[in-house]
Image: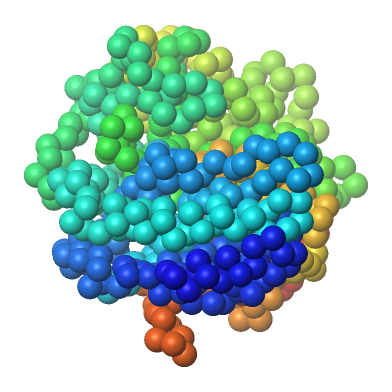
Length: 586
């Protein structure tokens, strides 16, 4: 746009604050319109936000590409990847590395980088064939003056090329795009079949579960990487809507124990199952691995916050008559944190819980025969999981998958026992049950006749969540009001910083929304989930510029940007439950 180039030329070498003139200005280009949604106040502030709208007459995507919610989400994720690839190839995402006060700084133009999962994002929004792409741009500076040559280069020369190569149907590899969307649809369909087949997870044959490294989510590229192979007794077949035939291991509802020697793949299998709440990109190795969408991991969390949770099913008769039907703690122990973790997830409707013995509190998992005799039950407040896990399934309908390396008593309560040996699963249920009957553990049943009660809480968010803007320094941390830290390291299913970012804005939304405040936590979460399942909408500005709105924008309408990524309501609930200063109300 000549207008934008002229404007940037006019303010070149002036005080950085002059960039504010761009705020809310609309600049028409041949193929798109550009608007500055937010303009940073100085070179060291967080980057400016730019919205680019491309009309359906330019994008020309056939309606078939976005005719359902699943297709729309998959297409927007695919287009985000194409844009990011083009930006990186043209080096637009590089900052000036000049040294000293007078060196040029900033200049990096970016879109949120997706990972291995195909997710609902605000980076690209599609409505009736119109596309809105959202970018961040560190407006370039020299000292505290404007250095607009780089801005002119990026916005008026390189950006039109990005739009041309990434956001027009004719410019894309259409077969690649079709397969990407189909892969997503097949995974969604598979996940929807699980409950009717009475299984909670499906791991396809030939899946590559190991990852490249502890800090990379990409598949292990080693030629010796072992491909998954289902035991015959657990094998199940599916024919996907695309026509793709799949065989693999179905994990049935109930209690499943995964055993095996160290380094044989138990935790790798469990981590793969945990990620089955997401759809993955073609070639990830975990595509078509799906699990119950309500599946969550429970682990020990010393020091976490608990507010008003009913943990009496697991912990009772505490010293000083502490009330465990509405239990609060600022510094929970490992066992208490696990009891709260289970009860909070059951409260909001999770139907599958997974555990890795490595990250669980031993005294919450088991109390063996000797300890039962040394410490009498009336002097032990904790009822370990082993005594409740069957009633959790039979009364509450909650299945469990446990990785167990050292606690053989779980054989007695398990419906299915899988041994991982050399990364290959074997169904050893009968063999393990025979061993258990030869060597009975003679544990006294401590679980009582019934599972126990679950709280249905209304929570009031702490007032500090309303103060200022939250900061997300890393995937597992939200900082409210400059110094109030919320740690989400136990929410191991989070995969992108954008999910954490949206969780922060959803907490703020819960804090100020009066309707939400009147609801119980489960109803409030379901209400928000319904909103998120809606379609994007369009608003026309005074100059006929059509701004698109994602349902995810609604939690913080004054701060529209492309960095939000949709988490699950269970991840949001886990974050809310860990907030320090939340209060319970009737």
